[in-house]
Image (cartoon, rainbow, N blue to C red):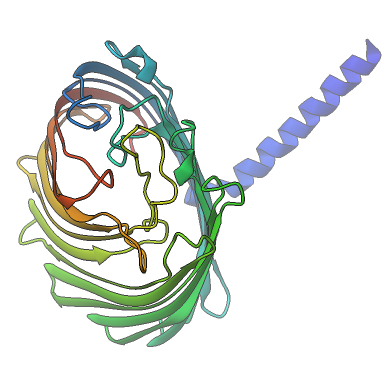
Length: 413
């Protein structure tokens, strides 16, 4: 008994000391900002997981979510974190019912001699939409973990040094789709040159080493090297233009995967003609690491690993518009069109070649009924068509959904 009391007394003393320490850190000039939100959404979706048209089945979906956010200044640093958890109920396809969640933290730090950067990581788990697989979608949960460390030197000077290290890991609960599990680490370094307040140029070299551990018994290891140039230009107070271009080379250990020389480019224009209107245009061409292979389903329904070495280059264009109709009502819309080139041919062999074209349209309305209450409704349309002899590399689908939600806030950020 005396030992228990001594233990409780020591714990109480430790907790009081810790509380005093936290109060000293979170002084009035650096008080923590904590917010909590509870939301409930109801949706009707004609193709909830974007399956092929032959398998698509509509469903009613209920989503409940709890989210906690923290924003804590600590001297010259700033620490932010979040945690959210939810429950998603499918009323017709109960096998898709799941409990998504997410965790994340980030530290913005700065030090003497113009050094600054970020250190952070996050982990998320959610239902995966089967837009990559032309077979009936079983329940498949996707888990993604990321970590990053970024550092910059000479931020307020014309020439600054930048470097970063990132780690990524993705897993799937479905054995059928575990073929696409992936992990990699990447490092990049470069310089940023800002000759004027309205113009900056950034160049960097990136090296990536990764693997697809479930691709075969021995897995598929790959390396990739990229050189990238970025331009950020603000021609006026209401307009901003960002452009990027890169070239790279990707090599795989599996003989069925071709070595690739790739290039990518992007252009983003953001225009705010007034305080109520925000317009954005984005044009991109990408060939990401790992996108060079997809799951291929053979005519007998089995998984064809030998025919999986296909090139997938995505060219996309998107337009978004946000309008603050009043101080409490805002309207958002987005249209995205993407074209993918698909090619499973290898040197001296036959294979599939074709493309697919996907269209996504989103429209939403948000009403901030009070500081602690948000009401929203939205509609989404998804469509994809195929052309050429894709032979299982892609499939057509259609999906339409409507959703309304209510979110209750405590300490809105």
